[in-house]
Image 1 (spheres, one colour):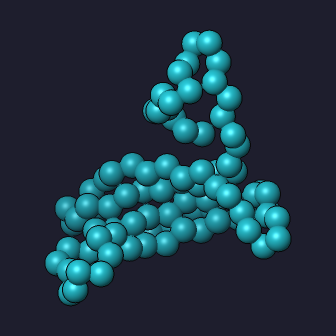
Image 2: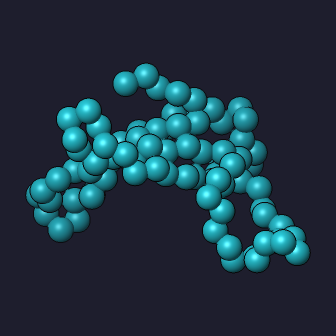
Length: 86
């Protein structure tokens, strides 16, 4: 699978070995030059889409972007979830 900047995947792990085993595991490829890194830390927004692999396994396709505090406007409630977070 080709790595794309500011994206990644989480794959369903299947049967758990122990109760602390993760349900999903994967990788993110993030370009920190485009993020606001302060004191070695960065706050990002993340979005995920549930998909199936070619073999039928479940995965989450991920995208990250700079975190920007959303401001509510008169046409949108402050707690309303957006379909397109970026």
